[in-house]
Image 1 (cartoon, rainbow, N blue to C red):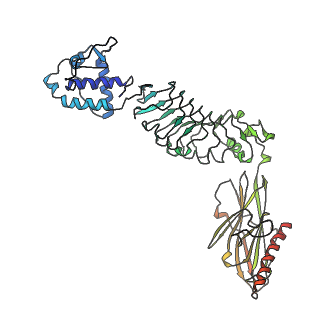
Image 2 (image 1 turned 120 degrees about the horizontal axis):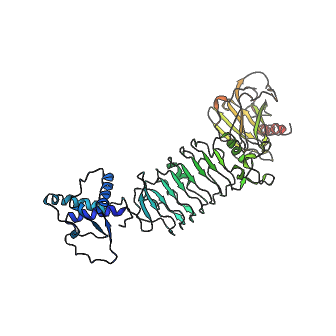
Image 3 (image 1 turned 135 degrees about the vertical axis):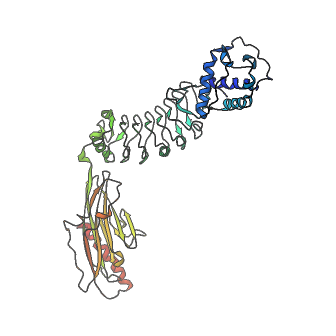
Length: 506
């Protein structure tokens, strides 16, 4: 075991106890070394080491023998029985206990310190292992498990494996800046639940084990600046409720997912400057967030757009609002008799008109008593044929949805969702079927209130609120008729297709 500066106190007590217990009685006398060093006033050194042991183990080892306290000097590194006065008969009774205590003391790693490092105890009781500026290529082995502050800055570390920090589970501060670290194995930091400060700035990281942050709920400072990070996954910082300072500047970040910095109630400082941000509407949320938050965005004037060309050099917080408009949606509907339908039913046709910048994508959500269907994009090809597996609900690129031969099983809520990089808009109708002897009734086209009350705006990624859906009710009347032949069924499908395609030109 190699001891650091503070570890000599522990070694001194251990060697004295071994000597007192007779543990070194048979050892030969040492040959004096010309460079032998002596510690003056060993009483103070031994007493400090003894206090350290008592504090760790919650035990009282009593007073040091009076005769021992009369020593004027203590040799390093060897102590022999001849260095101490003989023990009294009362002291001799303690020999077995002293021997055990000595072994525990020597084997205890409490103040162990690797050769390249310097270890000490701070005033607040925390143990510091100072290993900076040592040209280290790996995390040194032999660190005390009680170390709470580990400084490894300005070395030549290239990689961190899961076992690199296994010896120091009590770490609260870890400084790894100015190394050559290009990769960190997932799980490396997950075993450090007490970590408050983590500095990995000025390295070569292209990725980071973001999942490890789930175990670091006490983290207050995270420095990842001056690396080569290209992304921060959505939700990567969720749960860091104590995080106060986040440094992401001087990386290769082109965009950030909406909500990246939400759920960080203690965040006070954020650094994002010197990243090549693409100021598309995907990043527009950051402008709005920066405007509303109390977090200090350090050097906001240097947090600039690198693309598109028309915005290059412009602050991210100054993206023109006219370029990014959240979507709007309006839902209209039409029912009509099927042209020779196989069940003499009706075709329910819904049309979703959307607007926004960039142009929104149209999605459909269908909720009936027996099915839940989500449709992202058209189910009808450009040539008018239905794509495989999507024949029941015909979704067209222009926002039209056709449900041929609408039946009782199709009753439910039909929702059009418009999505772009700025947000989402949804609008819904409830559709019910009622039997009637009357002819098919055409419901109002272009009803200006259609779907108005059932729709609502929400940020991209928000869940739809079912309580606000389906306030508009559409009743479809079914028309009775005679059965059709197989040839008639083909006419029916053609008729539905023509009806839907007709709406493309409408």
